[in-house]
Image 1 (cartoon, helix red, strand yellow):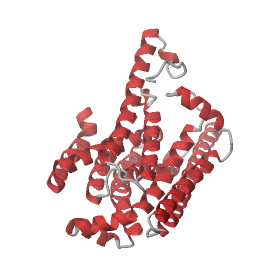
Image 2: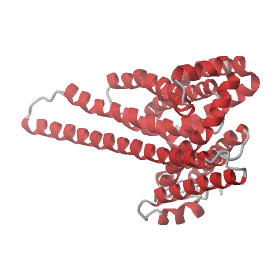
Image 3: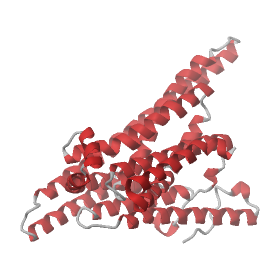
Image 4: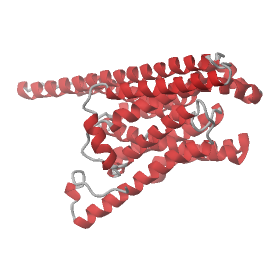
Amino acid sequence: MLLKTFGWSFAVTALGLVAAVIYGGWEAFGVVAILSVLEISLSFDNAVVNAGILKKMNAFWQKIFLTIGVLIAVFGMRLVFPVVIVAITAKIGPIEAVDLSFNQPERYQELVTDAHPAIAAFGGMFLLMIFLDFIFEDRDIQWLRWIERPLAKLGKVDMLSVCIALIVLLISAMTVATNAHQHGGGHADKAETVLLSGVAGLITYLIVGGLSGFFENKLEEEEEREHEAEEEAKRSGKKVSSVVLAGKAAFFMFLYLEVLDASFSFDGVIGAFAVTNEIVLMALGLGIGAMYVRSLTVYLVRQGTLDDYVYLEHGAHYAIGALAVLLLVTIQYQINELITGLTGVVLIAWSFWSSVRRNKALEAEGGDDAGSKAEVPSGV
């Protein structure tokens, strides 16, 4: 069962890690391994959401999502999107960016280094918004309650996350401008780049969130229409074309899932820039991670057990917040890629350990039914 579900993921992992060693040695192996773990962890909630929607779809649309959807998710978002980001910020063509990364790594690194403030500001703001919107939401299950309870109360203030994100961006831009002035103004335009890129990251987050909300509403409308049509058919004794209904509703489910997957993959892709600027390593790590997200989705549909680890979503979002801060710091200061990568992994591992402790405590109390309601001391 496990091999059947995760077989392709295991195979892609083996090939990807071997390719990393051939490309850049054992250091590249370590970077790809960290990126893979980060992508799986940051997209865990993606798999949970996917599974909840996918199980409502018929076999045909499930197959469409797990085939065409994989191509869009792996090759579209995880492989092409990082290249596009580098191409836009470095002001070169996507093909040229890939060519330079293979044939002129020194020139490629120089261009990416120059473009890094824009990438870091854009990505830092996008990830920061994800974290802030999560931490300011009042939720039944809380992990680090001493942090989350007061912040949930503050979250009742409208647009608070946007205001805080903009304040952080202004501080970052002003810090860059101050440092540029102290060093003779050689990089005076860097502050403007940071400011514009950060605003672009904020706008992108709002657009992606709006699209997700739009398709979610469409999906709910279609499911409601399907239910009403079935009820009407029962009352009138007529036979309803379930294929048409399932097809139409499933089509919106498919679109919704793809938009969701794109929005979830943004954090993994942007977070990857905090670990490495190498397009090849990024593509390998994110591609491996995306395969596991798909396998986890299938596993959840068949087993429905992984969502028992209730603090994993919290850990993933704290990792996103940490990556956001680290990205913004790297605008001015260099941080070792192992620190950026392991910070997220440690937070996620901590949340997993807390989830296991919680489940054991609930089992000891015999309160399985109250498992999602009762709060057990977490790993604080």
